[in-house]
Amino acid sequence: MKDMIEDHRVIAEPWYRPLADEVALFEAAYAARMPVMLKGPTGCGKTRFVEHMAWRLGKPLVTVACNEDMTASDLVGRFLLDASGTRWQDGPLAFAARHGAICYLDEIVEARQDTTVVIHPLTDGRRVLPLEKKGELLKAHPDFHLVISYNPGYQSLMKDLKQSTKQRFGALDFSWPEARVEVEIVAHEAGVETATAEKLVDIGARARNLKGHGLDEGVSTRMLVHAGQLIARGVAPIAACTMAITRPITDDMDMRDALDAAVATFF
Ligand code: ADP
Figure 1 (cartoon, rainbow, N blue to C red):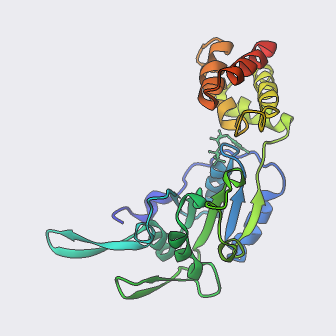
Figure 2 (figure 1 turned 90 degrees about the vertical axis):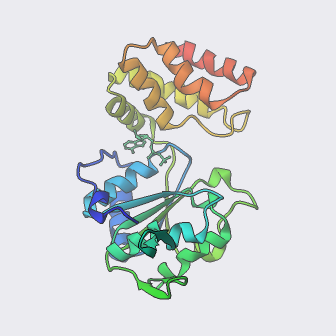
């Protein structure tokens, strides 16, 4: 990788509102170098949490958005051809392991299982990564730590983590924050008054009750923050909720009507 490890340092504190004892638990897991799995729906604060923890621990953060086309070489590295011949380029996992970063594999289930298994030797007592093509057994830097995120809602037989992968991690559950905490988050992140944040959080709670009755995923904290950001820029609240919440989350007309009605109750 061309980039320098210093580019991955988290300089300014990412604001994170703890939901329970996850900060202390993560610190203990880091001290033990126990790999951590963050479980929960999209948009509930997992990425922000890991950014905050990297800042708190003073470690660089290397993030990888996993997808099904990703190969083991995309994580580990490959030889590249350039003017001076072939040159090895570490993939993000090797880069993080070599330089002692926290490596965050976001939405790990999106990757194929033959890709996921490359993390195994890094997640047990060996803490090594074989760079087979290069003929190097990379010993992880003592500061290296692996974190993955995982949305159990998307779980299916085709897309699940192997037990042999899961059992290497300690897990923290993330879910929607309780209302008063979510109000704090929305008000802070969007820059809106508490009264507006309260209404957005109420709309979110109504919409989450529709999950399973036509909505696959609940309205996330991220969506409520988006609606608040539009309101903070002068957009009328109903238009803001339509753009940030009801239109992105569903194409089903009946469901849109139900969500529009929930919005109209509060604004
Ligand atoms: P995930 O990684 O779970 O998909 P993110 O961490 O990207 O979700 O969260 C989405 C947004 O929601 C963040 O950018 C932030 O504005 C807000 N957010 C959610 N939970 C929290 C929290 N506990 N503290 C601070 N911000 C939060």
